[in-house]
Length: 243
Figure 1 (cartoon, rainbow, N blue to C red):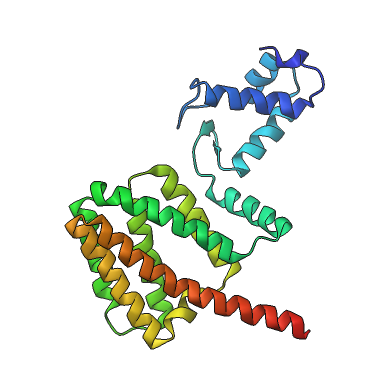
Figure 2: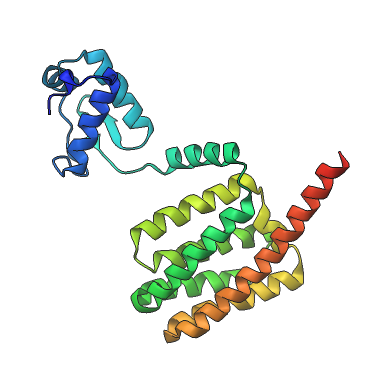
């Protein structure tokens, strides 16, 4: 396709479409070196400055890596850019964190169904060690870090890369919207104990490959977190009304 002859599009769109087409068609794969700015400019009949601008944009999005003295290479690390972009969209759409939580829980249900069959002995042992650490005396903030790690391991055990990617993004969004949320939940000893039991129940269900028990344990876990989210949102709503 001759992008230089396309009408109705700006130069950077020609270049971006060309780069996208190279990746989508499989001509450029992960870690492949991208043609030089001069080569792309000559091929498309555009200026090198225009190509340079698009390369910079692709670098910001995490799709290419610029190696000094070597050139540009295809990579796949878009998480930071995705977090920022989705965060802005959510703010514009006024999406609240309970909606994020519901999606994340949905991903965990999908992940646990896969993990029942796909989890590796090493992954089970890693989850086991996390739970042992969580049983030790520690601050709610420290416990919250292990809580996050446990849930990341759970989703990773699904071995579904899309679930892992989007679940990580949603965890990042939860952190952006709710500072120290997990710590606040775990500060309550009763809730902390209920969550501790739910985590162990999830682990034992995976160990036994018992899907029914795994879902039951995940249901219990999500109810505890949902109740705290509801309380927090009600409190914030009341504060807004009082202002």
